[in-house]
Image (cartoon, rainbow, N blue to C red; front, top):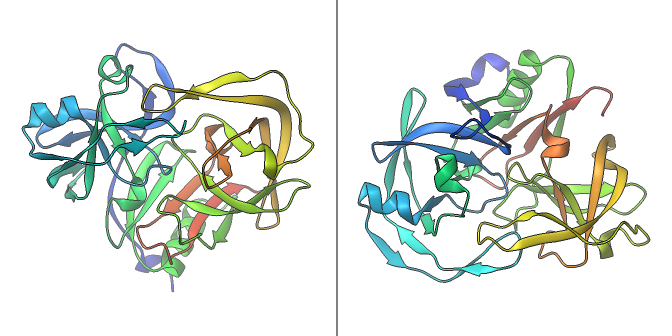
Length: 286
């Protein structure tokens, strides 16, 4: 199917700047949620859309107490189910459904961040294209073949990988490996700073002492050992990992590719887990 059969529904810039002029590793977009302007993190590792309880209360949305949620660190936090709410995304208006509210992570209010978007769940049929080369988010409608053709035409110098998605995971998970170890289900996580693998998935890799890699949305620390440069292998292509972190305990999946690899690439993902994950990487790897 030709690239002309892919249709761009909207596009808007990605920023890494927070309120006050600081910079963060995660991609951010400025949108209007329920009529209020806020920044939201684009996080392909998030299974649902998350809005802070503070933003939800300001908008005046109805909530119902839900089960405790679990974050990247494995820690739990209270959560609330939120009624449907409008999202103005560039030139179009969408409805956020099945949204969850959590207490605001400590840095979010000062950063002007009101929550986290799961980009693969923005639209039931369109692909979210997270362009970390030109720093923009696009929603593109079309079949896998049409969107692939559109991506190739748009960025002909990049290598386009068409990857089967691991359907049992609601986040964006494909098969990948740290060379020379076997491939395992691995999350492509735009919300994460580091590339992290469980120690059981990379036996023999030993790093420095345990260090803080970051924090979950609950505020709990994520710790691991830095083992230095490594090679990530995806669909026979090799990408450089500037610094791999090894963790003694991770909930599934046991591998996670963070922004230290994803910057400079383009990722296209959709809501239907049977659709391919399209990942454009530098032609020679990195």
